[in-house]
Length: 522
Image (tube, rainbow, N blue to C red; front, side, top):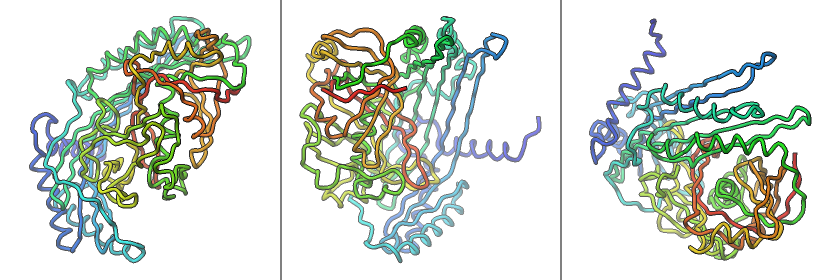
């Protein structure tokens, strides 16, 4: 086997990163080698009169494994097509404040000499930015920490043999294809890890190891006679966890359910459009929460900083303390919920993570903030919402986990259905659209059931609903209790220029909305 220069450099960088970060469970304090590297940036920044400096040294790993079963054109044979992709990156980024302005620079060469040189570059950038900075950067105070935080896990999924992963996906897709009316079946697993070290001139030294794991099952059925195809998928809760979470996903068991439901979906009659009550399941409502609650409560969006790319927000500063939803709606932001995708020990400003109220019984209370933003809304502390998606990108305000509190213990899914005369139960994610201010939207789903006279009926199809965001949340009149509460994630939340990607979870229980406009879609 010939070792290419690219392969040699990649393996060398991986070995350096492994030695630097060490085993996640080996110590309660950061690696001394990482602390030495971090100190090089802090010394250099001090030499150039920077009033603030931080450094992040990061190793990222991603692994995506998929398997698809589909017929070969013209032969009727079933093709089994595996797909495996793995990539990683390793480097560091330095931020400084000089003359009241930010400067940032990064490099994939992690040595003390390179860190010193890159810190000088960050200082040069800051001095250039200071010439056009309207006001000096103002950071909210933060405590300093020396800590090592690790996602709770028993078995690192990257240590599991690839054959074991593919065997699982093979069993899952075999289940999906057992009905001959299922045209194709697919299953996938995705793994992500982030080794991260943070040091600041304010005295913090923090090392973190963050794990994420998620999977899905997809089925497509075809009715050639009527020229119809329908799909159905199963997406278990995406989690910050280890390989021990995989059995909890129940991929094989749910593959059987998806197989039967996708065939039923083929013959499901279309919805009758009109004003209807909706019962939205957590794996569907999470996306509506994401787009219509979590995004518009980002402070930079409300201030217009995201107008060029991802839009602004209808929740402007004058809405603080005002009603924007019904009394059944209390939303919290956090980066501490067990197994949630945005959960970590500290944000990329070195702020210890916690929980804060966004909407309290329908009243808007707080935006998502960073240290740089807190003073803009009169807050003394950051809500811990600073994040960069790699060592090469600048931390800025990113969404935490945003969740809807469950209803009373005695509110069940059955009791919510019993209160509906004419409605639709919606499960899973579908296509959607929302305007630049997060004010007008349309959402579809993955599967739909009719509700008539307080009872869940058969499956229906071609359902979507439209509303204005404040009207929609004012129409919420009940959410099931804690026993029904589940969190689901989204792993491709894009924001900023250049675009950065974020992963977060949104928790809720099945929730009822009154008289929402339901339309017939293709």
